[in-house]
Length: 69
Image 1 (tube, rainbow, N blue to C red):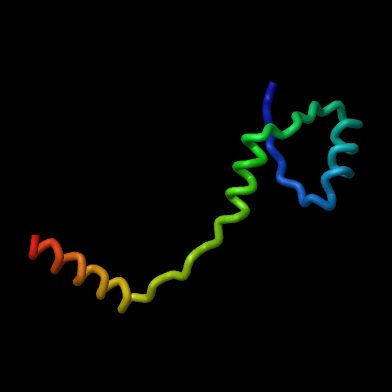
Image 2 (image 1 turned 135 degrees about the vertical axis):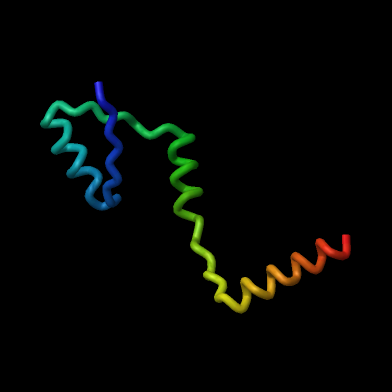
């Protein structure tokens, strides 16, 4: 048997489940761990991307600390 995970918008979930059940698809209920993982993934926001000047400054600072050690 093959397992397929489908991400469906919450407002369409009920309709999709009904259609899949009519096609004899077995739907597994989400476990607490899966719900927690989804909640954590949704809470992660992308950070800002540093520009080249910030990268160079950080590299220089790191290298100067390494030389002093």
